[in-house]
Image (cartoon, rainbow, N blue to C red):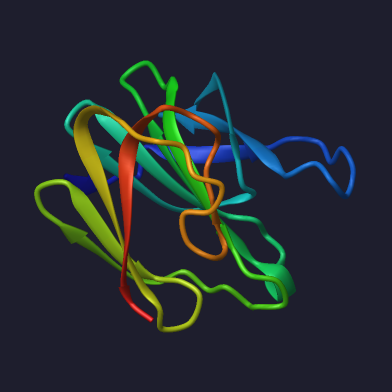
Length: 150
């Protein structure tokens, strides 16, 4: 697992106030067909043959964080979003936790761990994982989220 400099993103045109911002993923200077939620790339991590992208929403007073796991062909495997209204969510203190996890603070001093699973795992969908955390409706997960401290 390592931080990667191979990625960048191309913001897509603004649609409206209710449609989340999206970006096109760019790998090694080549635009892909992969579109994910977010606005600005905070970090990219290479893990085995997969890629973890962390993006913010680009809105300082109401910042959100989007975490996406992409497969070898840049297909979206899993994602989650974190946001709290009227909270300047600043992504800080990223640390790689070998062999398969990252720790970070968001917002403020709240610590989180995202673990990348070696294979998808069956998971009962829940309307709310944690307050402020949302995920697409799915029976399968590749990412495991844990709050480390309040």
